[in-house]
Length: 111
Image 1 (cartoon, one colour):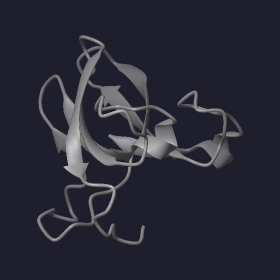
Image 2: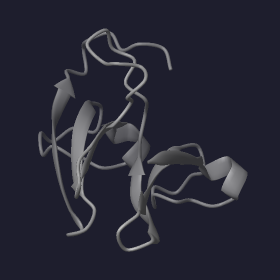
Image 3: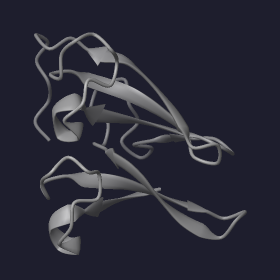
Image 4: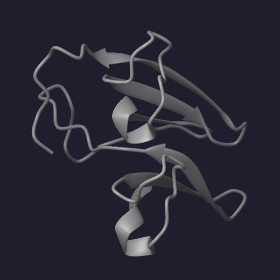
């Protein structure tokens, strides 16, 4: 897992209309292919997170944090696009789930 700078690539990798994000990429060792998740991702800087492990990876999925505003989408279905959400991407199946990680009123760390 790694993040790719849209600015460095010179293209919008997550389809939100800008090149301001860092988009999560997955290299699937089993299939030997690079997967652009199409999701902006941030490293977890909260106290509960281990800075050495910014994403949670299993055999078929990766869980990471993303701001809805960086995706220009309401990812958790609450009618707003101002939250920080945890996304669970099943990259081999091409599906994802999201859940609220922090309320919009909660102070978020500087990134």
